[in-house]
Length: 508
Image: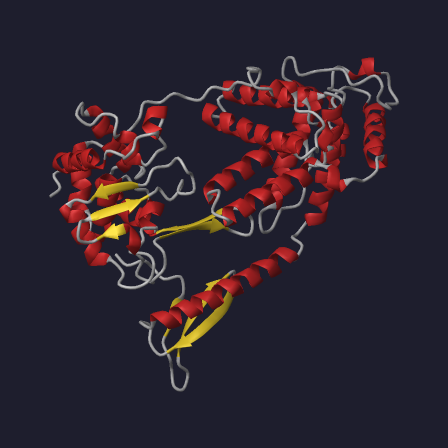
């Protein structure tokens, strides 16, 4: 099934030639003319025009204020001040409330047309709620053990002992509490404005460094997005306007405790929490290496087990032989080629997209290459794979006769393109995944396609004659010192192993 084109063809009429157009956010954009719909070069040029025009439209819309935006921004600023004060004075209950409010307001503000604020959105609404509701809210958000008396040295107009462990927003005598918080937030406003010294500033600096690594092909776009999302979670938890030097051992331990609480409440998966903490620790280490933090928190020293979060242990999943055979039977020849390359040479989609003519010996029927992901690593082996007869024949059938890459899509573009959108989200066009997914859906097979290479590696490991070759098949760095110093990788034995795999899958 041909891939649907992004632009719409409008046939010519009278003296007007045919043209490509796009309707986007209520606007009709004409991107270029052409003598025929089948003119591929004209379509490529029109697509380039559209991509630039889309950027312009998006930038124009983004620059226009949204409905009720000033009200949201003011409410968020007040709650951010509450969060800053609460973090500084270990008032965990009010910090949790402020964090929740900021998150909800920001989410609503992201919509194209945010609705007006409602009662309770603004911080100062808290002081005019009926007493019965105040107590219910206090009990709902102030978890056992979270209450802690504010710092006695703070410039509060009321005795700290009367503040009921951080729940002073919700106790009686609302006017007194309003005065307390006006005093606290005025202190935040009196402090010198140092936007360059906030958590948000340094998170952005770190992510810009990581974005450059993506452009240099030293970091994948999906990994960048994962880091960005994890650090945004930490930033929002600690407060984007919090001073960077507030990050110390106690703060990192409090963040760790929050992740454990979410795991216990089953609102966060252990693997996700593990990744979130790991990326946060990586950011803190970068701050220390750049002399932004004077000391590395001791809870992060090597050998410390203070911040441990275990990952879920899952048994490895693979395709069954029957599933592989069904997929190969139902796939078109081009899709079958993608599956065979994954099974035969341990490839992922990017590996297939990156196959170059210089890596293929068309006479011997082999591909010699490093994995695309780790090709810059010195210890990663260059592996020669002997292709099955059907694999090499299909590769010849669909190969490009010119250019660097062996396989391209029907528009002459790479099969897989990964990058970043202006907002940092991953941009992925994966023709290989799309084609295989269509077959998977027809057969109601839900296992991800990354398991093809793992299936072959698992079969190799399970055969006593070839056990030990699975890492070489996967293109991984040798694990032992003796493996690293082999004079020559056992290519002949690997060829025998892949020939045996063909018999298991019923491939000629």
